[in-house]
Image (cartoon, rainbow, N blue to C red; front, side, top):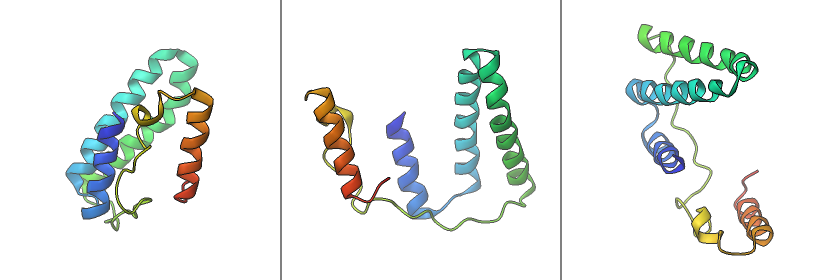
Amino acid sequence: MTDVVCELAEKVAADGWSPSAATDTLGGVDALLHLLSRLGPETADMLEPALAATARVRALLADGTLPAAPPARRRWQDGPQPGDRPEDWAERDPATAERLWFEEQRARGWR
């Protein structure tokens, strides 16, 4: 799933949001929210505002009243880097791997 999100981020960064990309993304977010709401009634109650928000955004998209957003700024310049994927560092000692991964992210300006 992370790969799909990265691909979407690259597409949006290059071309900006299109109504179809936004609708597809909202569909995925809705599906995830519905799945997470199965964790229990309390979780479902906490996620209800997010589901309502995605419904409002869908309505704005359907009406054509959602303002066009500029292309998103990329947080990285050259795409994925070595060490970005867990399989690149997961075989190391877990504590060391986590520390190295966070140091790499911090060095790139990520928070």
